[in-house]
Length: 173
Image (cartoon, rainbow, N blue to C red):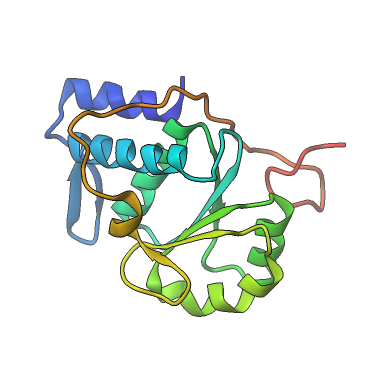
C-alpha cells in the first residue's frame, strides 16, 4: 500500500474527521485528500517523474505534510529535509539524492538561497506560504481545484536505512 492509500481509507471512514493539526490549524481527511490529488496532478504534469526525489523543507505544517501524500500519489520519492540541519548538510542530502523539486516555507528562504547555487539538478522551487525569489507560490503551483480527482496510480518508493557514514536512505554497497 502507498501512503496515500492510508489517507484514502481514513477519508472513506470519516471525511470530516481531523487528519492533520498543527498550531490551531486543522485539515480534515477530505481536505488533505483533495490537496494531495492536486499536488499529485501537478507533479504528473511537471518534469517530476515517478521515482524522482521531491524534498520538503518545513517546520510541522499540515499543508507541508499534505505534500507527502501528493508525492506518494505521483509515485515520486519524498526526501525529508531537516530545517535544524546546517546548510551544508541539507545541501549534501539534496545533492546526494538528486532532488529535482524542493517545497519549502518562506522562513527557510535564506537557507534555500544559500544552498541553491550548488544544486543544479534542483529545478523546481515551491514556496508554501508566500512569494520568494525564484520560487513558485504554492497555490499558483498546484493550480485551481479540479472537478474530478484524477488520481495517478504510481507506487511510492521509500527511502530508509543507510550505510554507516552515509545520509539516511543512502543505498548500501
